[in-house]
Amino acid sequence: MNQRSSEGELAELLRSELNRYSVGEKLPSSRVLVERFRVSPVTVTRALARLAAEGLVVTRPGAGAFRAEPRPAAAPAGDTSWQEIALSADPGGDAVPRSVDASGVLASLTAPPTGVIELNGGYLHPSLQPERAMAEALARAGRRPGAWGRPPMEGLTDLRDWFARQIGGTVTAGDVLITAGGQSALTTALRALAGPGAPVLVESPTYPGMLAIARASGLRPVPVPVDADGVRPDLLEAAFRATGARLFICQPLFQNPTGAVLAPARRAEVLAIARRAGAFVVEDDYARHMGHEDSGPLPAPLAAADPDGVVVHLRSLTKATSASLRVGALAARGPVLERLRAIQVVDSFFVPRPLQEAALELVGAPAWPRHLRAVAGALRERREALLAAVRTGLPAAVVPYPPAGGYQLWLRLPESTDEPAAVSAALRAGVAVAPGRPYFAAEPPAAHLRLSFAAVAGVSELGEAVRRLGGCGVG
Image 1 (cartoon, rainbow, N blue to C red):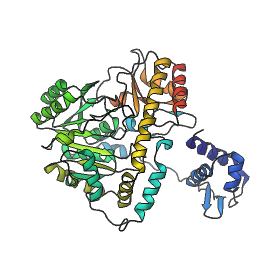
Image 2: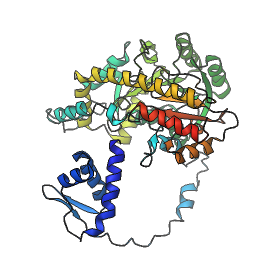
Image 3: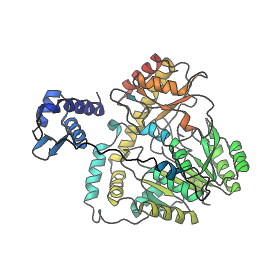
Image 4: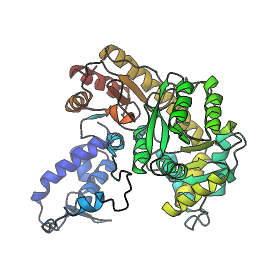
């Protein structure tokens, strides 16, 4: 049983027993709960924290946990129906949609119920995270002189320099802004580079979080198909001509969801096409630290071969560490850099300095390269296990591009498949998967599923998940 399910089950057991205690009465000690339920002290602490967050218990350091006073009855709900008009009114005649669809993002962020295998997750399982190294880095960071002061708005110079060296080419610290993770960087980039109503070219399929940002900003995503070698340059050029777009957003390395890598012959061609169109290329390098053990040398970022400022590059440390280590970077050249900086300052001022200091400590520690090697080995093992299970247990499903990096398999389902029904059947069978529809800016060519192999406890869960999927008729 993994840590997450253990603490959830223990919280439920303790919740069901609370009526045995009067208000203010002390619950059994942590030691007693550890022995009684045969769980770790960490599980007990987290389960009690859940109950405290629900207002059912009160924890007092050094004294224990006590049953809390019942919460007062909720006040009658007010009438919020007026908001329907306020949220949709358009007195200025602005035709830009104001609603925000986050369903594609939530499909990967929402933790499934206890007992459900998580093939929809977008982050490393705790067993793959460098938890000890992150804790030590955070402790060291907190002791640095000035660690709790206000940082430069662009970010700490040493951290900007580290990101610049990672990007390579002639990129310098002066070209880099520190951001609160990749999603924040992507939001800043789209707001800086395109105005409401403008068309933006996107890979098809592509990351739903980017589509959500674009639509929430009033932009019009225009799909450009990808194949095993990444985006198709002929269709990209045709899309620029047809739309007049001045922005193309892509993931050249281990594209999400397909895992495709932009082929060497296409890299210079994509940049040349964008230059001729007078357009920017946003390079979302989200998986730079998630190559598999057998992926070989990785191609340099597009930004490393771009002296003319065509590429706006973004990346983060989050995917290779923890969902809560939200530290990333934007790199750009020319007047656009000042616009990116201004938008970030207006939105969030700056990334908290302790988090930046912790990131610096982490990437400068000997544990960092060891962690990346461990992740590369684990991801390869999981990819191979899931591929083998899919080929045996879901023979009608097709994996167009077996990936050499990233954390997901992209499955094309048989033509007759009802995708929403398949996702629902999978969840009833105890497997959470990401539906394919949110990855397309327009109508999808077929039913798809994205299966993550990073968020589970180990390879045995992957085999069991596929067995359950086959048993409920998926693939």
